[in-house]
Image 1 (cartoon, rainbow, N blue to C red):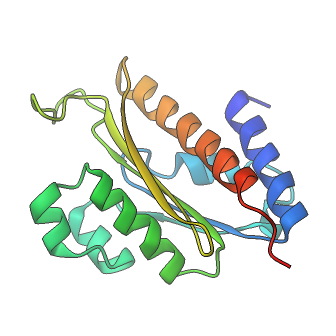
Image 2: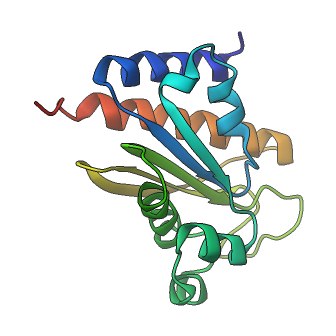
Length: 166
């Protein structure tokens, strides 16, 4: 089991203990978080679904990301990641979501948002939503792998910090 699957397995244990569900929205990672999660035996007991919303149209159609958010902030932004994470919760039975949108390269970057820029958001039905952006280094595969690791690690941290509801 690789380290991403180990992170996903830890996440699964935590969600099962809590009786909670996960769903994800991915752009630049193209379903890699969902793949890591579904590589874990028993994930059908805590993973609801994944949305691969690579295009802006998919973000709007599948997750309800406002076109004004995309126009104002761009696809790679904390505002868009927040809207994606909240859209996942609105379109699933999940208690928790993570959204990833970024520029994996080798092209597509700009001085304001260079290649390796990835925005994340983690949301819980009862916990609100937090977002952050990171700049990862390396080639396309390295940026994507680091993004998946960061997404899973962030989920573990967010969920572990939230008390169980009675």
